[in-house]
Image (spheres, helix red, strand yellow):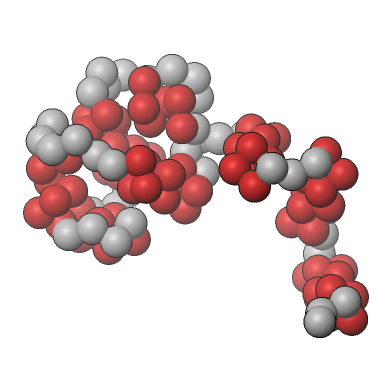
Length: 119
C-alpha cells in the first residue's frame, strides 16, 4: 500500500476510481498540474481538499491521511464523521440514515414535510 498521501491519492484515482488526472482534479476543484504535484509528493495537500475527497468519494479519512484502515468508508463511519462535523445527536444521525436509505417516494414526502416547517 502506498506510504505517502500523494501516492495514496494516485492509487485511489487510478486503481479504485479509474479516473484520469484531469477528471479527478476537476471533481475536487483543483488544477491537473496541482494534482500531479500532489501525487508526486509536492506540495502538501490542504485539509479542505482531503475533506472533499473523503466526502465525494466516500474515502476513509484515516486511510487517506495515514494509510490505515479500509480505503472506502463504511456508511456508519461516514455518519459518525458528519455527526462530529455538525455536532449532531444520535437521533439526528438516525434521521439522516433513514433518509438516505429510503426510496425516492419516501424522500420526497420527507422533503414536503420539511417545507411545512420553513419560516
